[in-house]
Length: 305
Ligand SMILES: [Zn+2]
Image (tube, rainbow, N blue to C red; front, side, top):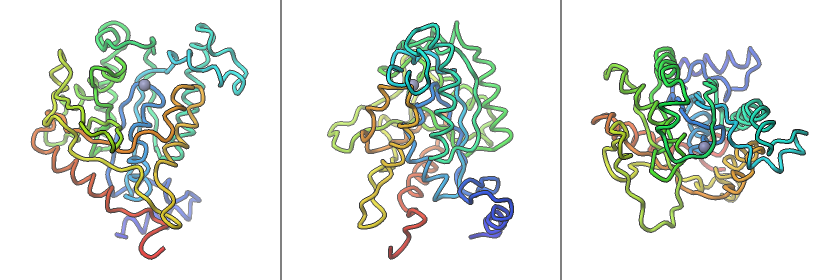
């Protein structure tokens, strides 16, 4: 422990915070997550858990939409919340509040510090990023907020979903806005922006990605991920536990998203991709993060346990 970490520890005891929640003096990686929907953060949940619990880092999330478009999958949640959520009108009205609470409940598990809700309309499923970027969302508010947050917190990394062709248009659009915001920050103080995806280690031939056609800011430095964290890294008694458990806790909190529940136990590797706007700085810093994640043991199970 360095001096500031010890001070944070003592102050956290004094103020009654748990140490893992006390990020004011974070000395590890500082991450801003920029995603479209509540539940998109599940793609890198194990990484965020490690950063906030074992690397003395912090993670904030900026959520672009209000999540109202997910009402079609809310069947099982209707009894939980006592609302008719699958009806479009009442679902769109109730879901923004419900999904914020679900995100924050899940965020407790992975250690999210602050939440910034941009409340842009979640119109519903589309593959088209242009429709929300050009017509629906106030993109300038989102870009301004990302820059403001970086100015205040000096993040090391901005995490986004990899904007591949087959993903939701809102995922693409949120990542594009994060890229535009980072690109407009002076290069000396820019955070490294990371594209994130999840895959199984059994997938023999990885899908290459060099950028989304029509959006030059999404260009990548390399056509494959350059680092990853394995959710199945074992720890605990007889090495029977792994980080997939925490990911499943988070997924379980998103109860209004019925289909998301089926992602439990799926996806082993959280992958990190290097956007071209990082220039030469991205590779080293992303590899460094992957190394830290790989080498940091779970706090309670260091050494001989
Ligand atoms: Zn989504």
